[in-house]
Length: 149
Image (cartoon, rainbow, N blue to C red; front, top):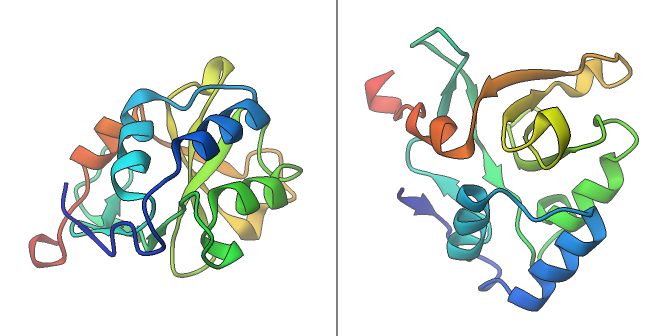
């Protein structure tokens, strides 16, 4: 996958990644973990997201979160901590859209390894997360480039 602004705030520190995983009580799904280690933030060249069963893009992957010393709004640890009361237990964010919504990944239980879209306008609702894909790999495979939309 081609990613713009890969490692924008520096390469990931593997000790920091292990500390983050300890803090959340789970190892990140391997496909997402590999992406994080390789890119530590950034935006995929193919950044348009389709809902399951549709080939028409409906969402935009704006920026990936990373484990770095950049702004808190782009830090995986800060955003995860700030939203833990709003996201279902077992789901953490990994990227944002331009409107303040988040793409999330399951890290435990029935959510494990699955990808979800969190709508910040529905944050108070029990069902604020909508299923997008069965894995990070599946999610990335479904991304569409602007010229193909």
